[in-house]
Length: 236
Image (cartoon, rainbow, N blue to C red):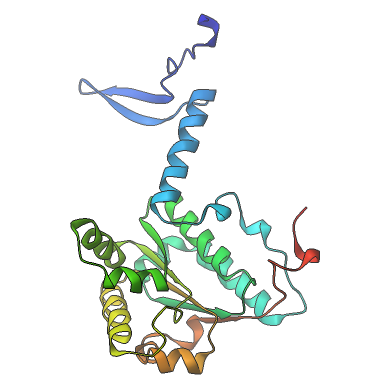
């Protein structure tokens, strides 16, 4: 049994160092226990960030370039640049609007950004617009208030399916909700990624504030074959 005990961490999974009479966490041990604890902590971060589990194991390499679609290649280049300059993006703030049809990799791309930000110890949150609307109509509990506050304060926020919700008609309520959130984050230089399948005209009609807050260079229009339904584009 003793042979199964790690001589470095004693199966605690952590490497520590004595400093001023206290043990300070240095990192995870390279033993099996340490690797398991590291994976567990990473999955906890992904869960707390709201990232969909199907995207947990995926990487940038899981994108299959659709060379026949210029906008898809441009999106992948913009995504790669965003991930490589994640520290600068956090400093600059701003809004990145990703438009396109279903299954072209918009949500995967945004999830990769959040995962990269988590690796750099930034706070992140993935949300779906319809769920934000639903939460806004619920009686506000302390937990709800904390969640809504988190939308305003996390380092990186993704709002998916913008413009899709159960409220059929456009309303000032929805316009004001998004406007307050975006203006707060913009003023604090907190990066926000918006994803939508709507076209620009419809989206700007629903949310006029977008026209004045997003530079044309921060808009990606993604066209391509649906990854979810095309057998040819599925990874083996």
